[in-house]
Length: 169
Image (cartoon, rainbow, N blue to C red; front, side, top):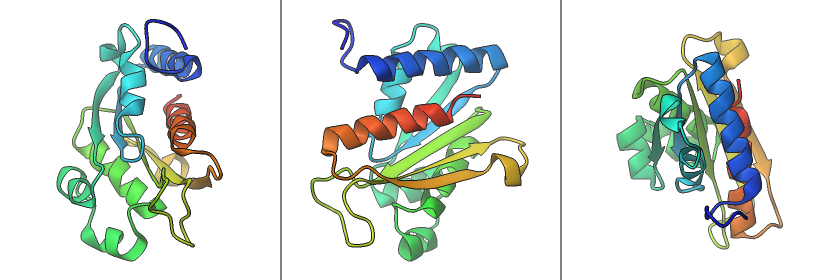
């Protein structure tokens, strides 16, 4: 870890690449974070000049915030849960609709040490990406991964790296 940042070198390096490559592509980005609690936005804003690319980030940790700020329907949360591809996709869409971004990535998960279930154990994380004006079949992305048995910090670290990767053009 560098002495001038709280974030790990790998996260900052990937964030720098995200900013540089999106700037070269003329793309603006937005985030909708839950389990990472703003870690991805913090990484992006570590990079000088990030304001040319990073439009905004939402930290919607509670279900109520997901519904109010990102227009995730209560039916999605009740049917699939907050840690689901359906919820992450709705979060990404909400971030895209409410921003001037060209691409939005959403992330939700169970970082632990509590909160896991048999179906969604601690370490379960979902990401989704939505691209404005894109071909839904090609540009719609959602995936669930399991980072067990990593601890809370490592789960959040791996989740942040994953979200950053999804922001690359």
